[in-house]
Amino acid sequence: MAGEATITLEVFRYRPDDDGEATIQDYRVPYHEHWVVLDALNWIKDHADGTLSFRWSCRMGVCGSCGMMVNGEAKLTCAVFLKDYYPSAIRVEPLINFPVERDLVISMDDFLAKLQAVKPWLIRDDEEPPGAEYLQTPSQLAQYQQFSMCINCMLCYAACPEIDGIPDFLGPAAIALAHRYNLDSRDQGQSERQEVLGGEEAVWGCTFVGECTAVCPKNVDPAGAIQQAKVASTKDWYRHVLLPWGKR
Amino acid sequence: MRGPLRRPFPRDWFVRKGAYRRFMARELTSVFVGGYIVFLLVWLHQLGQGPQQYHALVETMRHPLAVMLHALALLAALYHSITWFNLTPAVMPLRIGEDRLPNAVVAIAMGYLPWVAVSGAILWGVLR
Ligand code: SF4
Ligand code: FES
Image 1 (cartoon, each protein chain N blue to C red):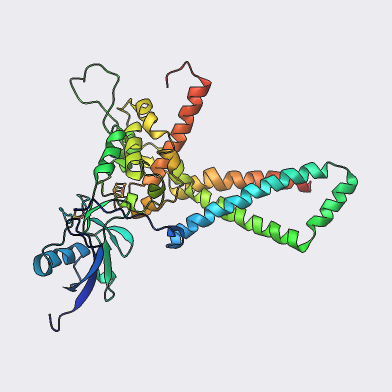
Image 2 (cartoon, rainbow over the protein chains, first blue to last red):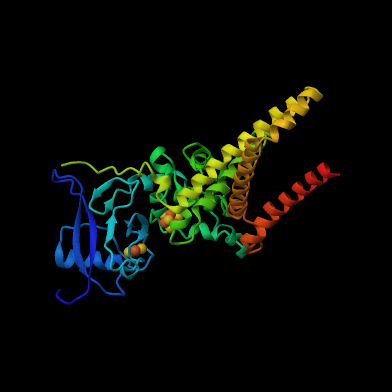
């Protein structure tokens, strides 16, 4: 690579099948202005070290699978350019707050279970599904649309200091998803979701640090969703106490 | 063969980044806000103990240290209130049809305006 501009990637390595500790391995990678961190990782995989493991798919900020810590910040690696760091080295690590399976690959099992726990589908009292679609006006759609843009990249979990202290904390994306369905005019499942949403391990586990919203690449504003869910949860509680005979 | 590796959040996270530090500052200012309310209640109770007590307490409050603590509590309360007002739009977004009202409008309508109104009313009550 003589004469060619290069940049160093300090990459987190962890291989569960050998007994070594997790390490940081340096790679010199050709520097191109239009390359993103993911391009550099792929260059390493193809030209320097085929054993490096990481996830990616779309390369365009849609699939949500390439999230990693880049110099300590949770980022989609397909959306951060080398030129924003050049000529300094770039440290690439797996998302924090998640168990590492191997190198830059984290385990999503917990996260997926949390998503499922909030019942992210339309819950209806109807016995039978209708013959046609449930109708919705544009302003009813606008109520929740922002919260439906999530790509499950998990960056928000890697930015949240509460996850570590409350391991079962539902976390930003799952609460935003629950709130998205609660705000949906076609849904009737709010009280069903309230059981998982109302506790210390859900909305009340949040202290509104706000970093989940700051790192979210899709402008979902999970922090806002959680606070709104707190307000809804409080109203629900009062309704329950003041009108115990009423419908929750 | 080992299992997945746990990598906990850094213990010193709250000093690691400007945004985290500002969050911590907001949390810490609540100590002043809460503390001042307790102080006010105790002080009000003491003031009611008779004219002698009243004058002694007013004198104590003239002490530079007391003035300084008040200034500090005021700054903390301002930081606390302003940062929270600015967060109101995220907590209570207002919509007209499909459009969300701009954040500044919500912060002013739900935070700053009531604040100014209540402060003005109290000030009027005191100075009148
Ligand atoms: S809320 Fe944002 S940061 Fe969190 S998983 Fe969804 S898209 Fe990613
Ligand atoms: S590779 Fe799909 S979001 Fe980055």
